[in-house]
Image (cartoon, rainbow, N blue to C red; front, side, top):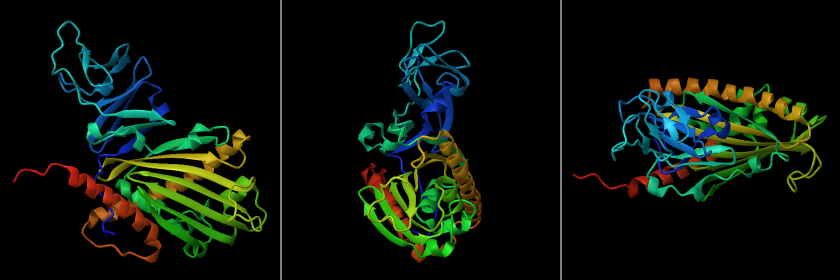
Length: 356
């Protein structure tokens, strides 16, 4: 693993650009990989993504509005369809071929809006991360959020793939005893397109969030399963059962505490990102207030992560060439970094070499 935290952009991949409801107002401006983009849903409900710059006078298209046949520039009224082609110029019948803006492949699926930031010819929809939790809101009622965060996007993956920080950063919510996290029984493995780990804390004291959610009276057997999918997605299942219920043999039992989380991190710039997360209640699904309570419990933990990681980014920016120390707890993080680097190396190898 490199001793550098900041990572370059991996472009030939799908990134979460927004939650589907973020387009309810019609237009969403969002910069991804230093590229100003505008997302919109046309009159037929189709989602489009084009550069946020009109080809006429360079005005931001996000200052415009959605009309019947596309996205209308708010400066001189040119209209563009979801593919970036100009379909209307006020006062002019002829539309020249140059009347177009760059577009990006975009897909709406399972409440996500995904965008492809690389070669459009390689945009394979089958490579979009599957998250079936969102297909079953009755079994997994959930709430979602989008948080801007001033970090390089891979720093969030580092954070999620090393949970020994929970006992120090999240003591008031999901943390628990720091030594229990450090000494957790952990299994780590590389996957085809990322890394996965599961960690067990047997006969542990339940943290405050677990007690509020499931009403534990005594000690618990607790697990955390995380799967990283290159470049910026992590699927999580955290849960617990009372000691003696055979959690390791069967985690699917009713009762106890079950939290399903999706984490998505998308680079805005080299050192700023968008953090998307969805928290699903898998333990008191028939109680709407339980899902809201869970959200209110989980939200502060992510704020705690933002505070520590933004401080970390500031220190790294101050001395970017200063090496960092690797420790035993970095095992899963290392697998994730290697998976990312493998994808990055493959992408670079496939690019045409610059002429000498």
